[in-house]
Length: 167
Length: 163
Image 1: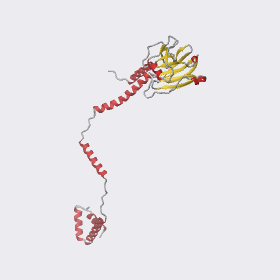
Image 2: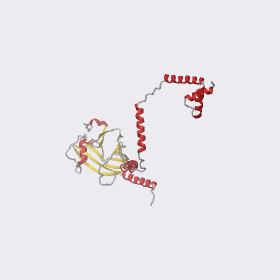
Image 3: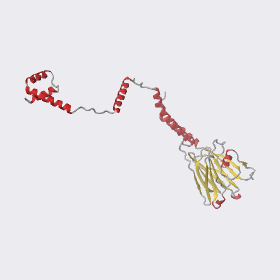
Image 4: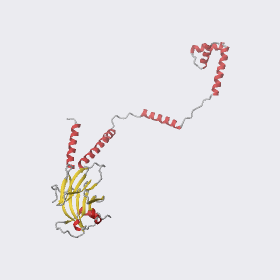
């Protein structure tokens, strides 16, 4: 048996022959006993391989199924949803009012700073006292409740006679 | 119809801000000379008993005196460009300047010598007091130079000096 017949037999068994080729090969197969023996042999080997190598299914996780379901639902919703109108008044107002609000706040802070000299949130409460004479000392007392700062000047030599009483 | 011109709008905004800044730099202040004593009356008849919010502030402070007499009071305005000189009496005066934000810097003079410098925020309602014992009275009385930024600006007065 030549090699071409063997290849054709393999193609026949795989269902790859059709039409005239198939008819001609079946006629040859009916005449050729050697080819029939090879056919039986190949069919036996193929059957043994199928039995020896069972098909195994890969376990799929629940997330995979749920994601597939969600994707299909979303796809179905996308197909049925009507297209959004190109101009939405609420969206337009939101887009316009947010930047305008920011500009208004910045402008308000700027005008407040200009008019009062105080930048909201940036007022420094730092105080500095500097006594410039050797014989004179200075101590500072602050009452936040009364909004009063007292700079008490005293003669260092007479410091013990201070009239300042701390509570 | 004329089109909107951003550059012109910005120029107007800057001009308005500049005018506002000029007004804001003119800070109204008030200065008082106050005597504290335990006596019920002042030896000087022109003194008047301190009253109002300032008296409440004095009473809330840890001073030992029972009575406070107002000897001088003057309203004035200060700017950011230069010091304003306020003369309290023949031996005492101070210079004050607005540093902005609104901070002030005060230089207190006694007998033409600079005694102390003090710098602090002085927003409306805030009070700064320089004080000391009366050396001639063995600490039985004390002097207070009060500089306050009133919430309600005092009536306009000539800047400058106390007599």
